[in-house]
Image 1: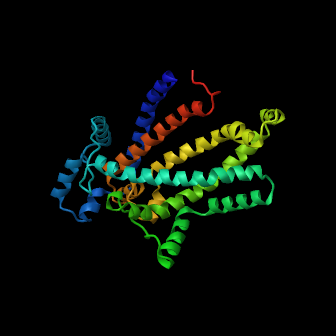
Image 2: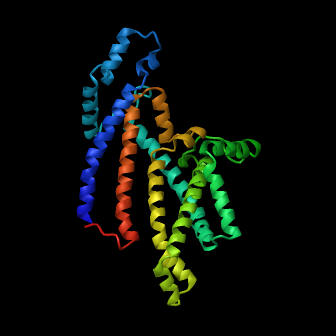
Image 3: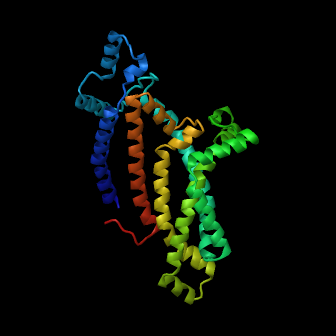
Length: 314
């Protein structure tokens, strides 16, 4: 296991380097100029040259890239062109908020999906199964931004229970903080719960038809033991894979949801940086997303062996 982890960690290095090159080139080839956005379309040439020199924008692209990477290695993520703040400070401030939103959304989705998926599989081809399947299909078909807007109209305008957007830090009031993130958490959980329910249902139905399940029943094991001890553990492996990818995706920034609810997380930071062509912030946030996805994949592979003892890493 330790040898496998070392190999995966070494494999991460070229992956991250390739992604940083691709992202760097795409960002700088996209039309738009942060200097023009900062000073307008008739800027003072002296100020323009000073800003370019300050942020290294007057150098060739390859020099800008190596300068950025060398600073990253020294844990210097650069400074925002528009916000005039260190990029790492912005990420360190926004990432915990996105992390809380992600964990609460996935936690709520699992609380709904696991019993729903089990019930749908156990009651296969019954009215209950049909209702659950239909409802999950509807939730999957609804775009997240549309569901978010509908919830804002219902529970922030017509029935003003929750705020329409924004974020209240826990230090300014725990209850206010919970209320401020309730609607985005519900929107995240809705789509995830629907997809996870359908995946768990299909996976569990497949496992319940395996020979070892029939053998366990033949030996006289109670149905609950067969379901929860023998079947569910194996059926949960593809679900675990999907949930881990959801964690990576959501930690990478719930861009649409954060924009709808004006939630100051990583996704909103990235959108704002793209609109203003704030190269250091774009590069820093995407690098953070890349590292999150890569390490979540590594942790997922390692945890496979804990879920299923048959999986070995030699």
